[in-house]
Image (cartoon, rainbow, N blue to C red; front, side, top):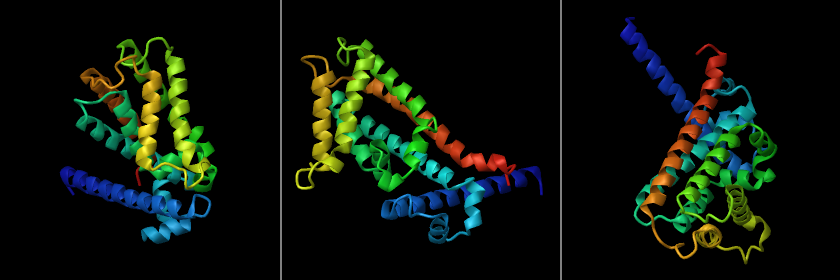
Length: 252
């Protein structure tokens, strides 16, 4: 086998490995949403993925590593969808529109919604493990930097500190995310209305006075730059979760 053929063979092997990992993660997501974290076993995942249980350990060192990889992929896909949606709203984007899109996009990812509100029924102890895995630190700092940039440019209120803005945004965002679990079923707003109400609350609290509804190309540019950084971090961490076991086994 020539060097070129060997590289092609290695590339095909890597592609098959990645496709298999993606298929396993698809199955894991479906089972967790159906049964919850506690009831979803590696045997279940292997059987529904049409692979042997040992194959799972070629990708992840244990069950929690697999689930962590799943959550990282969910975050990456959500940010990708958000970035695409934002690009379509470039000429009319402002704080209200951005938050509405953000909340609606996140709501379409039930696992991320469960993680956000600490849903133990769906994610079990993975909620705490994920919070202490270090994933949120960089993303949190990036969002704080994003708010500070908006503040510096006068795209959000300047009479609140960056820390206060982050506190307010987090409280509103988390509050609306938790609403389905605390409001009576017949009183819970639809996903669309929830996104609109959350956007309205954030906009009324943080938007510059008198310009809450004014679209700004500059707002679009700052938001796009922030999302590109977030995507870079999310992709790096997701790929690392797939490569971790490869490194352990010397690439076999």
